[in-house]
Amino acid sequence: MSAADAPPRTRPVSLRFLRSELRVIFGRRRNLAGLGVLALVPILIAVAVKVSSPGGDRGGPDFIASITGNGIFVALAALTIELVVFLPLAVAAISADAVAGEANIGTLRYLLTVPVERTRLLAVKYLAVVIFTFVATLTVAGVGVIIGLALFGGGDMTLLSGTRIPMAAALGRVLLTVLYLTAGFAALGAIGLFVSTLTEQPIAATIAIVILNVMSFTLDSIQQLSWLHPWLFTHWWTAFGDLYRDPIVWDSIFRGLLVAAGYALVFWLAAWARFSNKDITS
Image (cartoon, rainbow, N blue to C red; front, side):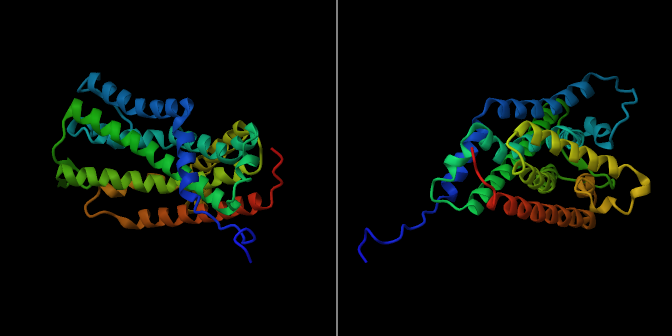
């Protein structure tokens, strides 16, 4: 067999596709604007607490009540507020655009003309969604820490259990919080990727993903469905509060990670089953 007759060798294109996918995601103005909106929330929280009456009853989460004692709590308060709508909306928009967006603008068929398996392409797109999820969550936490330290100072953090830890250890727990929430949002990203394979309209996919997210929160608030709550993908998101106890309560954290991994695996496989046999016409 001559060199010309030899079968073409498969090139390691995953990293190239990942870099290309990340350039597309972080190069779009609407995605950068979305990150800007996410970063604005901790700034608004910090300024609102700073200008409020010291003796007033602010109410709200315990993290907000603790901001004046340590600015790091601005990041935690912002994450608590944004994990309900803003962060899931950002994940929904990116994951919905992964396949449906390519099909809508007619580039999906072109992507599949290069020597890359659909499985690898879908894996790269999901990895890009997870990376964006981490960046978005880190943006909220990072801006919260910076503005919080600037307005309220830092120092030792008083945990929810009443004990105090050094500032370096507190920042380490904030990073653990970012990683934990990224895992939770990655489950939503897998759901979004599956929905994205069902349509060529990214806006419709985004709306569907947001509805599923709101529905999960709604079901989680119905006491009569308490048997269902541990199986909802949003139920364990707020368990990151256990990272701020001494010692850390790992039970809910581990259960949240297991549920997130289960959703991510099931819906990524569902997306793969749909995408691998999908007739690409655009």
